[in-house]
Length: 265
Image (cartoon, rainbow, N blue to C red; front, top):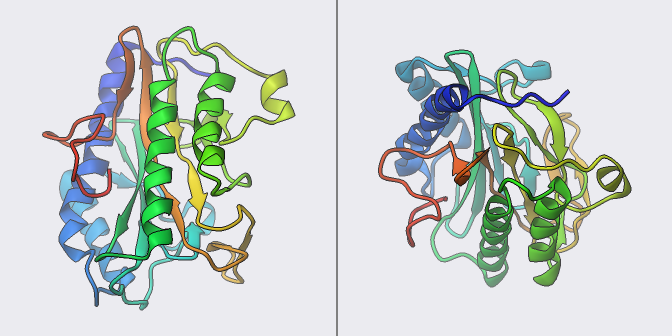
């Protein structure tokens, strides 16, 4: 069942969302060559604690970390560990935080150093797809129209659209109805809904530099590209309001659309 949020509830969700964005700001100095991904996760843990939030990923269906950190060919759900970041890596970090009974969820992808042409293009297209989806999150549009905006952005760039994983509604629970796929399928068409004020969605395109095919490693979590090409993952928690889309996972001083040069947004 889809649960619409009141303006006050959306404001409370923005508190959790701001914590997520502040955590990204706190870990930014660690996203450099030589840093083990577990060190970044430990910084996420400490920041969430200091902010008074609750890490949503830790223990979720047994997930063993406070954040998902996926590097290069890893698409989503990467488990932080001893792997050290290197110059040219494309790293995606997904963070979820609960506060005051509500959830915030966001993923940002970062290119370390110059990166390859494929990494640069993959990241660029993923950010464009997220922006297209957010722009379509307006009252009167339908969920199909929002998803079409994401899909057209990725397909038009002729990159790999990951169909296996989806965005979602979000509120008091991290995963609520409706599902928000990144391509229009039969089920979405049959169950299309009008976007109404109070609907809050985690919009999260995943874009591969090669094909959209993926599989899960033996750890049961880490999703990787079949062809070992790089992948990017960008996500914001977004509320549909009378005034248009409101991005809830921003820190003070951050803006949407992002200011050019803002890392990760």
